Image (spheres, rainbow, N blue to C red):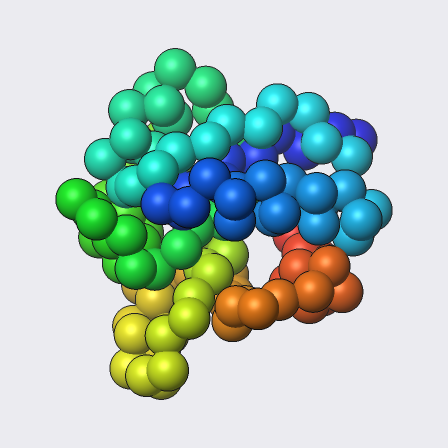
Amino acid sequence: MSVDVMIVDDSAAIRKILQRMLGQAGVTLGKVVEAGDGVEALERLKLQPVDLILSDINMPNMDGIQLLTELKSKAESKHIPVIMITTEGSEAKVMEALELGANGYVRKPFTSDQIKGKLVGLF
């Protein structure tokens, strides 16, 4: 089964690394949609539905927490699993994301094994 994925991060390099690590984690990628922030992610999601979202927490314009709140408040996107990616030292942001419905999180720097571990049971 191939998985259509959206990767949301203000760093193009991190988006490419995540895409590569998903492949290394054994995920058969279908379409990969990239977005630089939450606003762009919501716009792209209207045009291309996805099966999984990996989102940074700290981004300009609309951060990952705001994006997650929007995603989980809409019938068309509340079912999409969301894994948060963070450099956040504060447990408060991570706990907030989990309470809002995130399916897990990984801290930067991350490994393909950590990504794989978060995907177990999602598909």
